[in-house]
Length: 117
Image 1 (cartoon, helix red, strand yellow):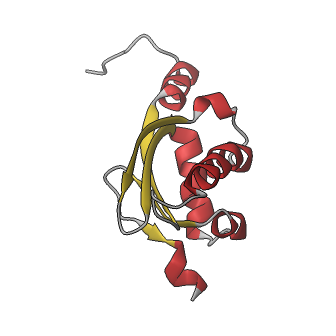
Image 2: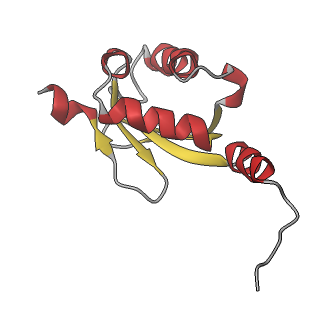
């Protein structure tokens, strides 16, 4: 017996796009750096442009020290997948922003720093 959810295929696709994903981004620097706020603001301004999304949709959840600086933010599933593709292709713009790695929740980190060396 088939179960009918009552949703059309298009409705299901829209719902999955609306879901947010947690993304973890590590970038060069230290939270004590004088230019830390500038670096973070630069990333938060430019990443939405790279993903063709409104900057208001990039929701910072946490900023914490790590081996560098680790920022956790929520973005749509679609934008998260785009960011992952950019990281996998060693996108120069991510590297120029000082981004060292990108990780989607429950997946391994994509380390841009290794690819550049």
